[in-house]
Image 1 (spheres, one colour):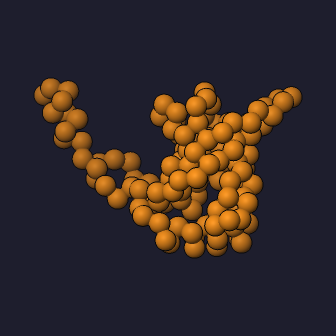
Image 2: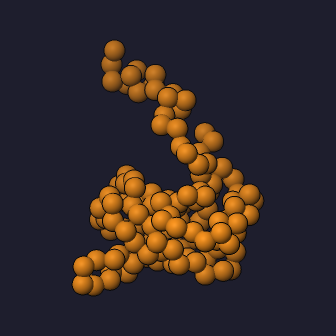
Image 3: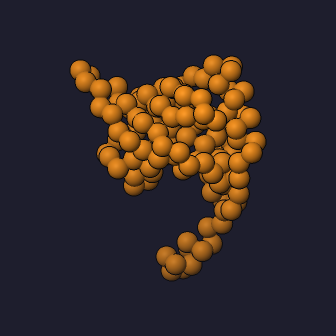
Length: 121
């Protein structure tokens, strides 16, 4: 079997199942790397969002397992949360929120209810 036909045989149902649906979302995000003696600020852009994390584009090299602080606005409310880098593909990074307050979780779920699914295809 050629590599082309092997790729075509790989269907979306065979892909890794996600724990939480992703929703299309676009807004600026500021990352602060919590490095040893210095904090490094980077500008990024949200591509998708879920109840457990965020997918962002950042033009920088980050390492899996790094803990960052994220700052962004959601429904005109400023958010500051910590997250850990769980996934990387090029400059697209997947971060898992480390802890959200009950209020933040409720606000996030309300925000997501009005968005289009990003992982439905």
